[in-house]
Length: 184
Image (cartoon, rainbow, N blue to C red; front, side, top):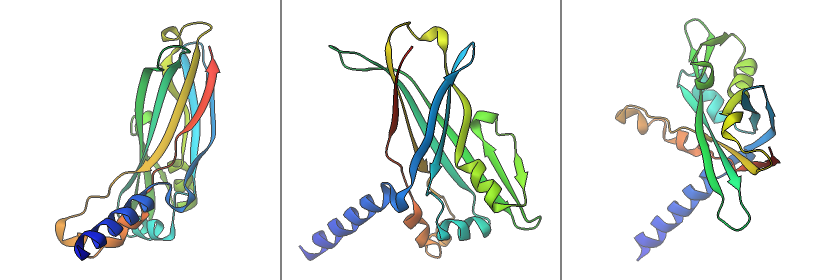
């Protein structure tokens, strides 16, 4: 009985710690369009903690994922999922060259390199002008909702390092969904 209570307490602490830990949230989300595509810009604030910075500086590769969904909002029927995409930003600190390399899936993983952690953190925290869906896939005068959330990808370490870096699971985060309603 005592083991069940302890296990339940650990599970609840882990679940609460994972959701919106440290106040991480999507901010500055906006949509626009080009002649061909619906475009999204967003950022995540409050995601970098001291423990995360320390782990990155020691060379542990870290990834943020941005999940974006587009649904058609309907009155009498359930909303219809039109499109979903997952974007990934990854940071790695090259401890020998003292540089940070950020790769973003929506830019075909082209490496962005800097000596500044602050600049690398900015690159990691944003998605800018990402094409979500071709405009031809949307119906004129229809209501839509675009949703976005960010989460820290699980860090996978060799088995023997899991005991040394057990604190890494303490900086997992997942933001709440942020939404924008619009009519096309």
